Length: 68
Image (cartoon, rainbow, N blue to C red):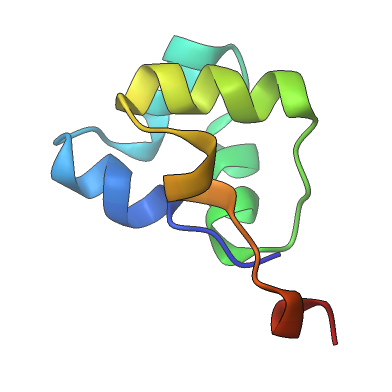
């Protein structure tokens, strides 16, 4: 799953560990989310959005062509 979590995290000057601590997951999970190798639940997506002061659309939106 493509996302913009890493870009938003870097812009807010957070490390993977700091973001992980804010949302209650491991640093490894943050890494997997950023690489698109882990699909977080809606709840976790929202927690990440709140931590990074971003919206779901900004971080996780997928266009129709992304599904193919």
